[in-house]
Image 1: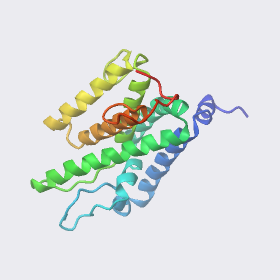
Image 2: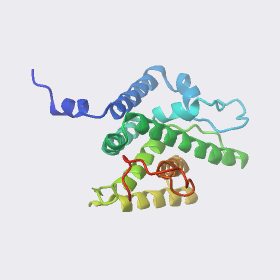
Image 3: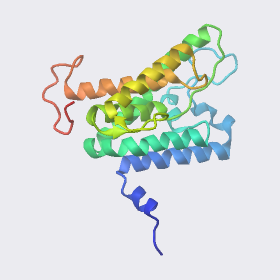
Image 4: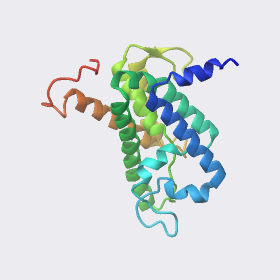
Length: 224
């Protein structure tokens, strides 16, 4: 029996990218089977007393990044992971790629914790955060730094643009949307936190400011 081309494509993905796709799909299935209440301890909750709501726990900084608010949320993030994760893993290798991705997830979570704490302190309601967007936007940032001239397409722009320009546009939109509260319900500052974490990690690996004096650049990191 012939195996569909999509299966072959999935099997050819580098191991960590493939494992992350499977893990996110599996957790989404668990959310559907167990329900929101049972999975709520693994969502990212704001710091402080939530007056009876679920409270923050350290593991949430990682687990929230494998949960999603709906099927389209999952599919969009996994498409971005598929498109930008595989090239980066081929360059960095599985170990460094996984370190980078998880750091972006955690960095995005820390940024969202700070924003959520401020909102609650101003009288706002305590809402949990879920989604891999901080991690996958860190991948977009990394792709733009390693492959700045590679042409990519980002929604809603209907044509290809250089990756470095795409990164700038995505970052500016996240900043604008976060400051103006455009599209409420989306953790725009978490997106920025993931991108900032990725930028800092790459500069650290390259020995660039503010991490100067770290020795020679790694040979598997491309110059921009």
